[in-house]
Image (tube, rainbow, N blue to C red; front, side, top):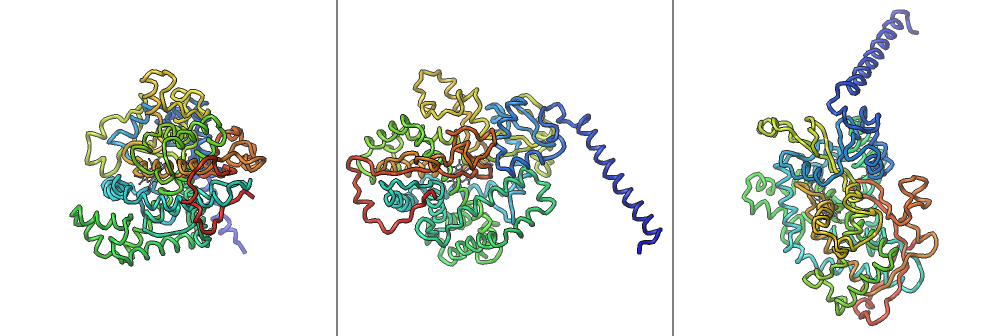
Length: 561
Ligand code: HEM
């Protein structure tokens, strides 16, 4: 039984605790309202006190939509968290991402769910440069040339699946189909591993598992307090079976590859190890020696958790967006189909080179789809260099950090969101309309306006963390779209199956920001998720040279249920 003295002591302790919390909260409240260096910036009141505002919308996978409507409400700069500012101009892009004294924000470290280190979560600039060098070699033009036959082979499997349903009126959900294609390409590029998700069931959980992880990572970057409170561990524990399966598969891929000689395949593994020797970098060489040690295994697995989704899920977003917009814009569809069918003489002739590059309408369709439904809606937060780096560069620290004419206080994170700037009416009039012609300068527009639009087009980011896979993404998307149009015609499926992927459907619910039926819907994540479109395929008229595909083994397309 509680004695009077223990009751008195505990109630006194409780009173002190409550009083302390209350005064700290009151102090914080007064500071945020009266003395906070960011107090002049507009924004939702709650965002002055907590990252929970952005976190809430990230959890609901609509942070890009909320950011877009907040920018309309508050103007071209607003405060999204206690130390976060969102901008939306091309000058801000330049001031932030092309400033050598600005670096990836510390919030990126929360993108690592299980403590693994990879290019995405690495903050040290020296280490990032080393890692980017390896990725740069893997994704160089020469390496892509060597890898192109693999892309063709995987695309053939994809086309065979379409062939199996062509003419049947059975609707195909393009999301799983495209995800499997790009996951297989990505697995081969990363570790020379045939995941075979297109043709077999075993590893088919992988694309969805990757998407789930990328959504969680995005949530923790938006609201780091969740991670600090250990929610990331709770999420991993709660989804143990899924995390274990994902980890086991990637570990298997990595260890299988490590058991082969490094030059057995042209992939990330061979490039990473060769790089260590070529650079004559002592530490890299030392790292290379114990490649079978757990340390290297851990490092490779960490990189795999970035590389496989970065190389795959992004391109799946691009492909599905192109299929969605083409199926809803008959004039653009007809012009592109004609371009492909008159430029090439056979499906085999569709390959990387000057002829593919001459398909300017194809490129315009891809760019307009990337603009409207960008595969990475996440916020690429940046901040001014800090810590040791800042200490070693006193000149940089003494210069003010200015974005769009605003002096940014130290420790503030700044961002331009790709979805928002690519829907900014100032650069893209009628921003939700699908108009590939924007990219062809066909409407007699002046050069200055056209160039400004190009500067605002940043689906691959800009600056020192800019995408290194841009060439691969354009090549893969161009090959798949061109070959599909070479063999087939496709249409929006009738009924509810045809609504898949657009706004104002059962899936998008009553969210007013998801009311545009002709906008391919994105679900915010480090890589944005999507579903659909639901399409019906037929063999196209004329001689498409079917022999190349007719030797097809059994196919297994993904139908809209
Ligand atoms: C349409 C497809 C793609 C889109 C829209 C896209 C978009 C992006 C964006 C926006 C970034 C910058 C992130 C930031 O600033 O924090 C990025 C970085 C990167 N992407 Fe892509 N990407 C695509 C395809 C690919 C492919 C196929 C690869 C191949 C592996 C790839 C590899 C990378 C790498 C290595 C980085 C650098 C990350 C860093 O330095 O932190 N991407 N990508």
